[in-house]
Length: 353
Length: 205
Image (tube, rainbow over all chains, first blue to last red; front, top):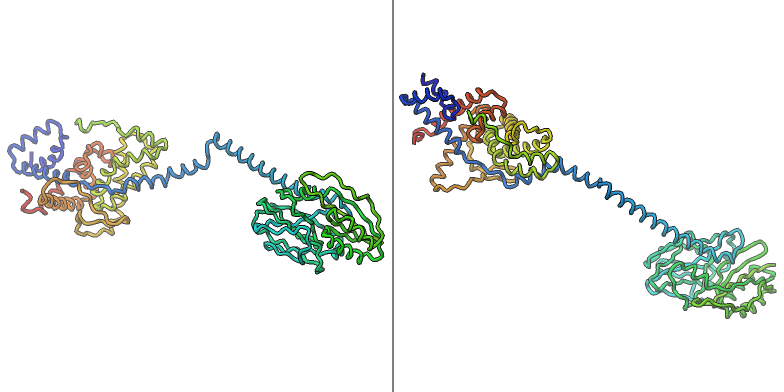
């Protein structure tokens, strides 16, 4: 064989992939051929060098980065989606609980609101008149974290009391002009004992005589009830005694239940307006409050609350204004509810020609 | 011969099966197992360490994404190599035009977005002089390998550096057995001649 050809096969010879016959041939040739021996030696060396090439190391971050990339491009998305869609047996109970929780909360809120409105309507049954829908005793109660000022039955103040941003003004008698003004409590909201929202209370007439503003302050951290809608100009007043127990909600309920007696007086008078003013003065003097006033064609109706002890005085004074016709016998002292204050009596005074 | 007829059982069979079912964390085992080999192969083929790292990462990602379609006709390792080689080739084509024929030293830090990467040399017990010597030699060898034509280089790397059989190379590169042999011969021959030139007198030492 020629050296050239031999040398071509040396590579395979080196790798041992030739047949035994071929190997034999080459062996034979190599014995005598130095050239080819040299060639083989060179080849061996070369391959050695190549094999001895130092391996490089992968960078330290390689695995982590590769895996992160794989997850980002594939698996991670799956996991994320899997998290959204929990297996049914977990999902359904969770959803059921959520629905129940919402339902319960809704009912609770609904009931609270309902009861507020209903109770607000209760006292109006006694006073019910005119077209005004349920005249509701509107109360302005501001929780004052400052320990509040209870103006209980005092004519202490003037036109407006600012309280935590509240400007309460109570126009006295003259609001009789406003007919059919609806007073209502749209919603009574439980407010936190933080500054209550200033409800705009329209100051109507500036009669300095204010039959009493009251601000009932909740000293207890009980949730305060605040006016939701603007209070009508007619001063909504209630005189509250200091001893009045502070109850949490509903306040209205607590309030109305104190009044266990009410009755009606009719006064015949020549001049209704003047009479009304006088009544106002009298009530104020007696430390009572006019809660409501309505004006009809020939009549004016005033509803006042006054301490029961003052009742006699009131009647005496009212006689000065005009002839009195009592609708109900008074001077009854009924049973008072235990824990409540019995002193307050509601008087409905009808002034007519 | 027997070497060519070897059929190696795929030792990665279990890991691959799990990956097929979507277990991504198992794949990390495979990454760690083959990353060095792959990077080395890619490095020798592309001539750039930085390119090699990118290429191999791409290869692993592609492999994972395609694993459901992997039928096990070849071993996982072989399959992975094929991907690496293909991507390396592509990378070479991309960078070849931009490639600068700079003197290339294994010790030059490689700039990557991660910052410079220094080659991490395997620990060496030889003396400093010897090590220096070795490095010089290796520089030269690398040069010579780089100077090969692509198809020759691939065969050389797979055979003499990665240790694949002729059969495996044949299936990986999709070439006939005879082609593998002849290419290998010519590759080695070329490197030999190149080295001889470089070493000059000292070749025979």
